[in-house]
Image (cartoon, rainbow, N blue to C red; front, side, top):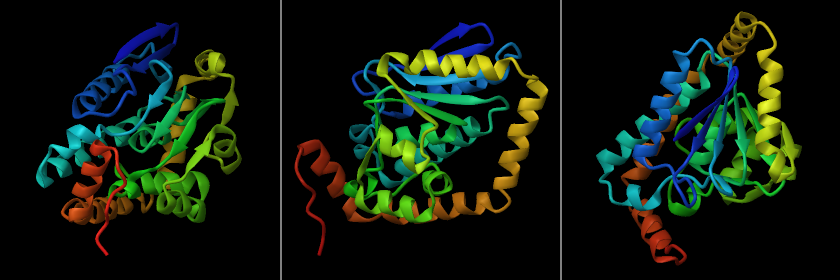
Length: 252
C-alpha cells in the first residue's frame, strides 16, 4: 500500500503488481491504512485506487487455494471486517477504478461511497465460475447498487460489465478517460472537502444507518452459506482449474 496526501485528501494505492490481487497480507495492509487515516483529523476524504492498469483483479486464488477450509473462513471473516470498516470509515471514500475491478476488488470498490471509473474499466463477479459465491457482504452491496435482479444476473452468469454498462446500471457514478480517473476522483474529493466535515460525516452515518436496519443479518447469512460452499469439493476444483488454466469440471 502507498499513501499520499493532497491537502485534505488522502490517496491510498493498492500496490501489488501485476493485478493487485487481494492476498491476506494486502488486506491487512489496507486495513492498517484505513485505521491510520481514520485517526488523522486532517484527512477529510479518502481516494482508493490501484497501481498500474488494474484496480484490483480480485482475490489471490493461488494463496486461497493453499488454505484449508478453516483458514479460508478466517480469510473471509478478515475480508468482511475490512470492507465493513472501509464502508463505515467516518469520512467519505471514493474508489478511482483505473482498470479491471473483479470479485473481491469490486467488493472493495462497492464499500466506498463513490466510484469513478476509467473508460477501459471492467467489472464483474467471477466467483461462481470458481465454485465460490460472493464474500465480504458483496451480494448485499451489489443488490443495493444495481437492484436484486441485476445482481443475481451478474452473480449467476459471472458476466463482466464495461464501464459504460456499469454506469447505466448504477454501479459507478461517473466514467472518464483513463488518464483522468485519479485527477477526477481527487477533484470530487476536494469538492466534498470544502463542505462542513461534521455535516458530511453525520450525513454518511445517518444514510448508512438507515440502510442497515436489517443489514447485519445479511452479513451473517452470507457467511453461513459461504461456509457451506468452502466445504464443498467444487471450490477446490475451481481453484485447480484456475491455476491450471483450464475450464472447471463440475460434478453432475
